[in-house]
Length: 377
Image 1 (cartoon, one colour):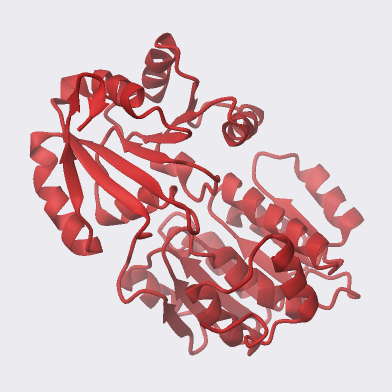
Image 2: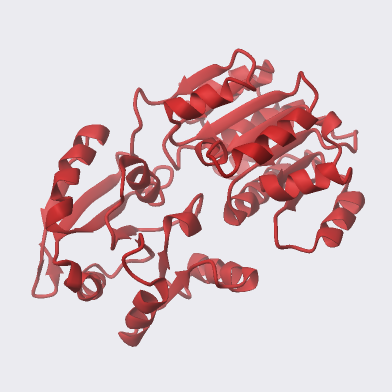
């Protein structure tokens, strides 16, 4: 394992990382940082919680000229939460490394004029945003794309899907031809790699694992249930494991509000994350979840995509993930970095064959468990 110094990072950035108690690079950071410093286009794939954000932020910081008040790096992410998390990392690293690098976050359903005003006032070198709103500002000539030296697509597999790719393509067309483009993701499909090759220039493809993998510090379990007994089983499971923080995933089988209200009825501090809540309610809920005022979030995959919250001890799949990619992203919300965690799935008879598929895909053992006299055995 190389040190950050051997990766040619500046001392001030290394000192900034030390203040965050980050002493040595992760595998994805070790492999990516030198390539990014050499201005190569890159696709970086590594499991969630493996340090992808700093894999692109640290070399970007090194390349930015803080004396210039132009946008030099544009970072796109698919969800509001991920945009806010990345910008928080930018601000933290800027402060800790005394880099004097300014940033602004640009997301939809926020007043456009306020964002334009903020861009003028702050004069950021880094803009973090969602593709739709960023494209709006480029079209209105309020965000100058020709000064951007590096574009990052974070959670790139989601940004290159059918709904986002048009906006991403439009943004890329507005950039200078020699702009460096970086794609980071936990998993990227062959189709997404083919699409991305249309706008990447001889990309370096980095996989820190030979195949999609999960953090080895995660325990995997399942409980066989009748579909009608899922909510009652969830209630008993929470009583048995008493999680510090749990993220409960739902597909479409249950109403998020219904599950949340039933948990509250049984004196559980739970909150339902869905599209109908306001931005303020969502931000307050995440803050409450972080500081422990609530310890259960009930969510769909869309709402939880990219959430990076410390100390999530349990992932509970009320509905079993529909594919291996979903399982990977859900399970990856726990055991961030070197911490440990647990993923427990409620599985119906029809879903049992998928257990073997997921075990083979990730090289894991998903242990069969049951609830007996208030304990998980």
